[in-house]
Length: 481
Image (tube, rainbow, N blue to C red; front, side, top):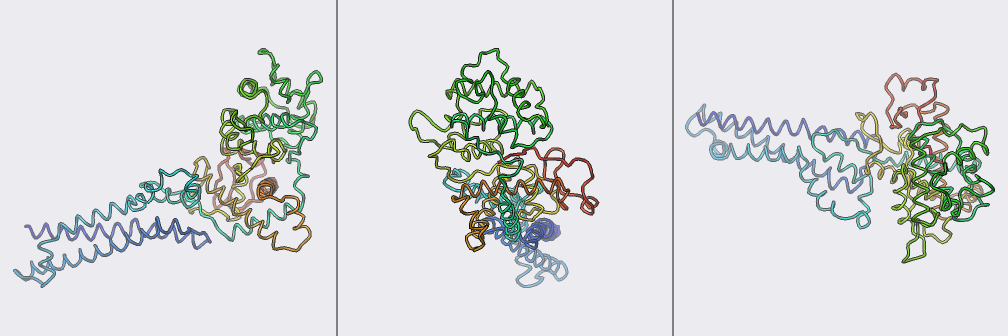
């Protein structure tokens, strides 16, 4: 009877090893191969913290399966030709059948839970991103996605060929002078620096309200121009003195929206919204109480009078409904481009997320995911990190192509945008504009934006034809540059 149990244990070892290899490891290899076959590059970090471990699991499970087969042969031989059975195999069968089964189960569990990858994650998770920039990369996000047990991964891999294609689109757009776009918010040179900062902040706040409240779409160039030029009783609404002197019972929302309508009468009305009214009132109150009526002071503190964008980024989070993924970076981009902080060190450009731009990156295969992934919301930090890494690589490719070109138009682009930050901001808007044109012309074949602004894969029937003739679903962030 004991031999029967040991034979069952040997069979269990083979089943465990086979299930682990065929059911789990082979599926992971297939997923990775699908990405690499389409041009995606996992990168060294992902290889050494995930892929190489899959080979280790596979080798260990195959070895357990072969050992289990040997033990089974030894056990059957003992029953068929007792008492010695087969030399070498039968003695091992008698002494180690259950131990080998336990080892196989342990290896299976480690492989199932991606235990070795979790060791790598736990070694680095406590390090802040400023010390380990890798934590703000697509590779870190993909490692998390594949390591989570019992969850289908939604990875985002970067494709160099797609990067090159999108870089070409960006250069083509830059040659066409994006400053002439109806969505390019020109610098309000007639305003003081404090007034420009307030126009940027309040404009971005109302732009965000458009997406949150699902208000009618509008052109952002005349909108920001109207916000900047708004006046009441010959006083500029964006001036710090005006905001500080507002009485508690004043209706700043009604005054501002009426001015925007007066200055840009052909644009849609800004709806009357109690939520938006409260948000704007809170923003004006914070500016008046804490920052002397000027959003420019978000970048200063009493210890130092040199502006710091990181400080402004953190403080801007108090202004609802501005969000860290899109409109706070958009506010900083606009304020810097308008010269609000003349001596600021912009550092790395923080790419404001726009779903229509993410749509372009997937359509052009600059970003790749698994065929099983139907949509991505870009609400997770890792997804936003992958998006921004893709954009950084596109800007690097644009700069390389422009620097290596002798075409006069390309040299002029480098002259117009001499710093990496300025070029990044220009590329960001250029690609946003290109995606907007494609949306209007139903030019996306493989991906679309759903009613929630999620980047969604088209079904087979949708991919075979253009979008319906109804107004396309636009993203939740319609950021101007």
